[in-house]
Image: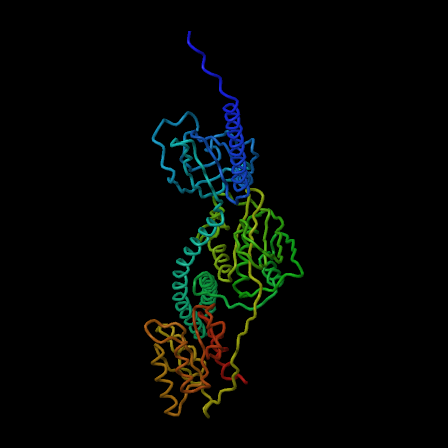
Length: 541
């Protein structure tokens, strides 16, 4: 028989018991450390501002942090265990069903950045930016860790920038066309006026010319819209009251219609710096669209309030003080797929009958608001109406110095001598003819340098010019802004009138600050030109 092994001594047993107790304490300490570490990382995940999702290898959700639940509008029980693809579009991970075939585990540093969409519980889709990284444990691919952020603001800004660039490029083209168009209209209106003055008793011909002049005036108004839309139509802003602006634009746009207006404007609404002509046009276009969306009648609700945006928090307008104007109708609404296009130039849904449009109205409104450092957005639901929201910054100080003038001393003959500078021959010709018919003595120059020489010669010959009419923009030569400086060096009190097809050019709106005495916008009629020149000659300081 084999001898039984000797029993361990009490000392050995005590030592072993102590080792087991130490191991148990160490195990408990390790568990406590792991628990605290897990709590720490869970706390970090739960308080994170970005969405954090943990998935298994099959792409099923094991964990979603609080930010993710809030962003999606889900409860935890509604999302745990479900395939990630039910909630995210555009993300390539594992298939929804079945295990992933065994493959070499990806390296821990592999990360994939991609754009996707989160499907909210309410059905809306939110653009998100997702970073997906593999979860590696002991060299084995266990799942995926995803972090995602809402990029709605960024997308809005990108779309706004794209729209602004599109408007700018078309605006440059529209401004150039309108400028040349106004030169032609100036000649057409002038020649028609002269032709009408030469007719004695031919009533039929006079009536036809009158209708032609009326058509030219309509074309002039269209040209003004193109100028406002273009880059050349920069606003000349002055502090003004929003209620007055809205009331005037609404009364004009709704005159004679079957649409009522509900006007709710805060009496404390801040003043805003705006170009009255441009902003009235912008409001008018929006109200006309709202009116036409309700052919059977209805109510347009107009609101204006002060708004302080402290943080963006998903708001498309940057933080700061704003005056918010909302124009809301009860019309047919706009389908979601078309809502982002309504401010695009030449986009219109008015395809039939008398309501057919050019698609420039809301594009012009958008351009005007953006040129006022503001924002404009639309909200709409089919058959539930449309709301246009305008955000404008409050007024700041604005000073616009004007130059006083005194009466011009005419010669013994009483004839007004006028120097005309314009790079378009047809404009020089008709303007000269109109002024000569009005009894003026006229000299013509194609560009600024030639005008300066003629002006100097007139002084040297004892026949100085009483008035100088200068085209603001000259191709291949010195324009009106530079020319008037040269003339002022010769004669500080020169009476210069600036003329341009860009009605909203800053020089046209603040001519006195640039050395001019008056401004006349192309296309001008004979009466407008006569009134402007007589006003300069007879002005008293």
